[in-house]
Structures are given as structure tokens and as C-alpha cells.
Length: 407
Length: 153
Image 1 (cartoon, rainbow over the protein chains, first blue to last red):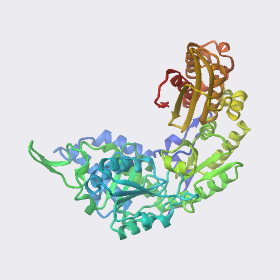
Image 2 (cartoon, helix red, strand yellow; image 1 turned 135 degrees about the vertical axis):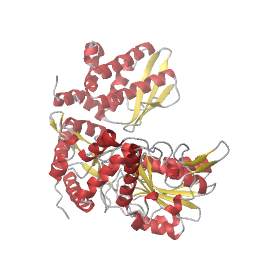
Image 3 (cartoon, rainbow over the protein chains, first blue to last red; image 1 turned 120 degrees about the vertical axis):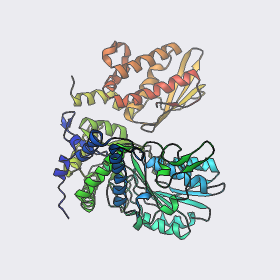
Image 4 (cartoon, helix red, strand yellow; image 1 turned 60 degrees about the vertical axis):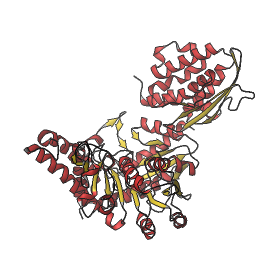
């Protein structure tokens, strides 16, 4: 395993090399969106300078190259997730679209009045609202796995919630609001024992540790390119082939059909059936470059760096008087949510911003879990592979400054 | 050009911090005949404004809710200055405060604002304009008798 040198990694991210408000930038908001390495920026530029054309239809050399780049990106994602077959990789706009796709295709086909959809209390709105909408469309009911005060799922409650009416279990791998890593392999095992398919929201997980969809056993896995150091507007839905094959199409348009007459339409095969219209080519190319960049650094080395920094940051924040961590699960990744005395997180964020420190404040698009903790908002620092102990130290100094202002 | 720490001092002036810690008129007005709820979805701030309006005059006004220091202070200050004002005067104050927090103190005669001048610092913080103006939007909605909750988005 190559030694992970965070200072060298930082050199790869041009955006980080700047001062803001007269101070070195401290970026602790990667759970919202991650910064991009030069390799990703270069790949997008190279694609437009050399290979750009529409895919899957041209007879000319550029279309061949663009198709190769796009389908090559699919293969790169397959390898990254260890899917069996590249046809199991569908390019979408992001995690949100991936979940909507499953809800509106698999869901519309299999969910009816009186059925149940099971999610958890700690889901991002992207893994709540599409199911809520499906319930409204079909007359199904949304059921919720509760969380405890550490921010862990109450596993004892799960078996009773997985009933003969449950049509799908949708659960996040890592909570964006709490940092909790959920035991999705175990949850999948329990759901499958009752024949219930499982969708995992992987928006916050793939950035911090290797994910093997075959090992997890889940039916669907969703992720966003922009949180994975790739471009915005590209994401992935992994689906097991036997689940995808019988699913009706999502959007209609070009590329998702084999033939069209005014009387009859023959839909294309998986995965193209789910990719209507000209796809986000630069997005796929950029995402593949991001994955190759991470693989070159070593996914295990990144995981080790993130784990060590998370432990350091947890201890450092706990040393700040009046700071309360929200989400103290035994297994966490990347996210530190907190409150500071009775100072509103928005005020914390503004004062840190003036110190050149970027964090997120608010409900993190996860209002139900905020309601569980009876908080309207938290401050959230999130860590990525380019963050250092110095970043964490700057945050701690900033928080002392916040306390000074509000003394 | 002021430095960043001067900007912070302008935003979190003593008066602002004091009002946010001990807001005035933090209550539901008894016998209120006007009310509205306001919501800032960005940060989760929520507040309600209740008023007793007698003819053209705001006889009493109170607010309740949760929010950051800026939104609480702005709401607290508002209840102080709007009381015993006519509808037209309250509307004029709304316009002035809106101009102050969006365009800055250079855009107007700050002395005419009295206590509200402490909100001058907000204009240097575009992300906080909605915090400062939430209570005022809610007050105006209550005056106009609009039922739907006010949202800053």
C-alpha cells in the first residue's frame, strides 16, 4: 500500500490553493460537495478538445471515441463498485435522480394500495420525498425505522417493520446529517430473508471507504459524482441485472428505444432503456477520471486517512467548551454535526466564514432526524481526503472565536 | 474598506446580541386580530407575529419563534419600533429596513432609523439578509391579513 501523503494530495486540488478573506481557505463542506482534482478538470477539457461527439449513433471517428469514453466510464464505475456487469450501471444526474428512477419504475410496477415502503428516520430528503410521492400515487404507506439518541438505527425494531406488505427497504449507507455508518449488509440480509429488495443511498459513503455491491448484496445502490470529487450533474444507479431487466422505462426519448413507429415502440435493453436523451458525456468522463484518481491513491489508504482524521477531529471538537456533538454513533464517517451552547448554527457559520472556514449550517435536508434530536439546525463540518489536522485545528480556533463574540 | 473582523463587530453589535439574548415582546399578543407565520427554509428559522390593530394603528405587537441572533434581534427591535405606528408608518419602516440590509447604510440617512441602525452591518453579509428581514416580511403579511405562511425562499 502506498503511503498516503495528504500534503501531496492537496497539491492535486487547485481550488484549495487560495486565500479567502485574507486567510488560507479551510474547506470543511465536502459532504455538500467535494472539490475536484486537476485530473478531473483535465479529463473534461481533454474530452471537449479532442473527443466530443454524440454517442451510440455516429459512424464517424469522434462518435466512436465519445462512445468509447462514455462506455469506458461505465466500466470504470462497475469496477469501483465491484458490480458483476457494466449493464448494471446506469448514469443519472445524481443520487436524487437514481432514487426517483427506482421509485417511479420499480416502485410504480410493484407497489399498490395497502403496501408499505420502509425507510429510516435519518434519511436525506432525497430518500424520503420520492417514496412519499410514490405512496401518494399508489396508496401505499411509508414506515420508518427509528434512530436512538446516539444516532444509530434501532435494529431491534427492524424485523417487525419488515412485513409481508413491505415492497422495498430504502436506507442510507452513511447519514449526511449525523455521519452514522449503517449496517446495510446486515439490513439487506434481513430484508432478503423476507424477499424484500433493498436500495442503499451511497451519496456519503463511497467518498470515505470502498464499497462492494456484491458483498453488500443490495439490489440498488445510488451515488452522486460531485460528492466523489467528480463533476456535478452526473450520478450512478447500480441495479442488479435481474431487478433492472423487468423494470419499465423511466423517461422517454432517444437512445432508450430500439425502434419507434407511431403505433409501436420497442424499448432498448438495460442500461440504455433508463438513459433517455443525449447523456451527460463530460460528466461520465469526469466521474471516471475521479474514480481513477481515487484508485491510484488507494481506496484503503483514503479510508485510513479519513478514519484517523475523524478520530482526531472528534476529540478536538469535544475539547471545545459548550460543544455538543449531534450523532455519536459507534461507527461514523466524514461528518461532524454539532451545536455550540445556545448559539444558533447560522451565527456559528457566519463567524467561521469570516475566518476563511467553510462549514454547512442548517437542517442538512434531513429534517426528520433533526426533529428526533429536537433541533431546528446544526453546524456541520465534513471531512475529505484532502483535509488535514491543521484544518481541524483552525476550526477549533474559529469556534473559540465564536464563543468570544457571543460571550 | 473595513476588515473582516470589523464587519463581524458591525454585524454582532452589543445591541444586537443583547436583543437576541433577551428579546422584547416575546409573547403572543392578547386579543390579537392580526397574525402571520414566517419561515426561512434555508436555516430552519420560524417565527410568528401577532398584532392588535385598532383602526389604522398598531396598538400591540409580539413575536415568538426560533432563529439565529440576527433574526431574533431584528424581530425584537421591530416590535419596539412598530408599536403605536400607523399601517403606513410600519410599511415605510419595512421599506427602510429592507433597503438598509440589502443596499447598506450608505444608501440612506441612517440617523433617521433610530435603534434600527444597528442592523446596518447585515448588508456586508448577503447570506444573512433573509434572517434580518424575516420578521419584517411576517409583520407585513400579518398587517395585510395574508393567511399563507411567509417564506423567504
